Length: 183
Ligand SMILES: [Cu+2]
Image (cartoon, rainbow, N blue to C red; front, side, top):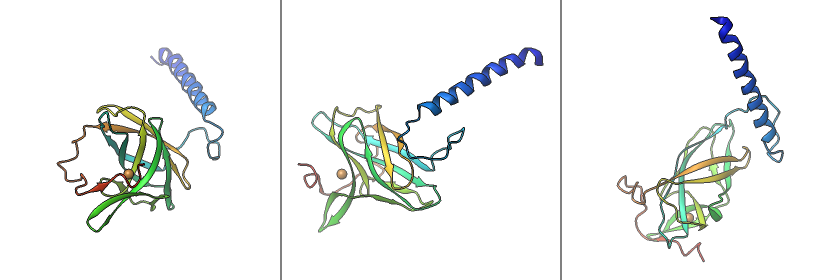
């Protein structure tokens, strides 16, 4: 029994080692330097429920929502993002003033250690500006998130039906002014 299994196990191990070696070689050297270790640790920044609503033909911007949990052991901040699907990506907050909700760009979104930060309608969001194509439900938007301290993180944002989260009451109501940030 063992004799027939052993060669197979060795081949599997060899393939795994080659795979790990290839991954290590392909890691871009421009990435923030960290001590070389044979296995990359999972990112200490955890992204959950990343979504964006589907857009129509005439919409050229979209808001990305997600929950970010910082498990790095120290306070950090989301400082920027980019996506191949949009010409520009900004970090936005929504502020209410005199009954109007207005979004404005922020330099960073604070990520206190250990506390989940919710980017959700009415709060923070990541704004895709200049969409290169309409976002269709079921599609995925690749994004890179950048932080003050943690290394950049690639995430996949799911495109959901426009009304998908409406009934939950998290759709911003009232007057949301887009023209404040969009020329
Ligand atoms: Cu916005």
